[in-house]
Length: 405
Image 1 (cartoon, rainbow, N blue to C red):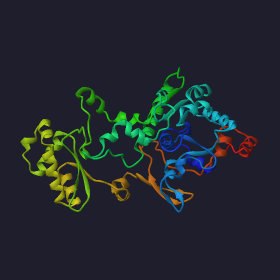
Image 2 (cartoon, rainbow, N blue to C red):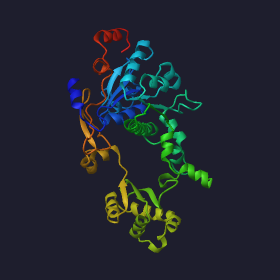
Image 3 (tube, rainbow, N blue to C red):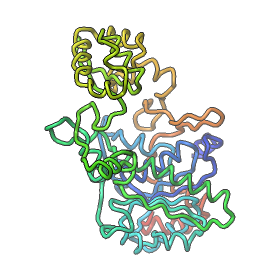
Image 4 (cartoon, rainbow, N blue to C red):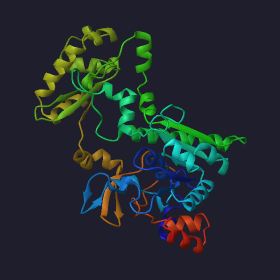
């Protein structure tokens, strides 16, 4: 453990930032993960026994779940029973220690356990609290549970995803949770910037509902409905509101799917020239939009008559942006991913060497790094409680005997 702590020192942009997360599954821990990858000391608080439900999620190898090896990486795991009064007192000591507190518990439980904004601010007036919930702390549904798929459904994204006449489609991963975590990490850093520059800083409460981040990213849906009175509908891979006339996926002669995007007047003209169509009929944005269906049909026929490699080579020569639709296997063997060092190998106590995503985004002068996979449950109890919080051995022994940790 000591060697691990030493190896971790000096890594990333956020060295010295102290974070405690009373947050399980995906959204809250994703926010903490973004901070941990950049060197923050992140303490992940879990109940004794089973721990975070995320530990059992997803596929396993030889009985060892894989998901948490990435989701819990670079963090410290401590066990703490928050149903026990002694556990809540320790939780308050963690709040006092931390710069950032991340919570995903329901509003009523946060109040009962004194982990709500008023309590956190009383315990640590300079703390930044990130509170993630299904419907937001200020809504009439603040005490209702919520998961990322609900957030996706409410955001407008699922309504827009899929093909005309077909059902709405969720993306193939925890999209709402992950984007909420990313937005939460961004919000935390914004608050910390103010704390560093405002002598009057008196803490900050970030209240984030699971539907809000994706809702914010679909920039045009509200103004389109407001100004035009229309409701954008599913348009397959062409997009309901597209930046230009060529955006779709096409199947090559050898059965691969290719995506082609031309988001400027010039790039659409490149497609027109490649297909041998009259350039004067696609000179303006209005002409290109009016002719998009014909362009799409011609490009579909053109791609189907060639192999994937032939298509990509000719499209590249024509300066048309295109790509094969990548699977995980494609990612694992792609030379650009390798050149970017975006896939790393790290030793895991249970599985041996495992491959996973590198730290993203990349910083040149002080990059973050992955120094551990997801830790064993409670692996850092003594480091955090004794060395960081200052609990003595007698206190630790008592808490262990009571089953609090």
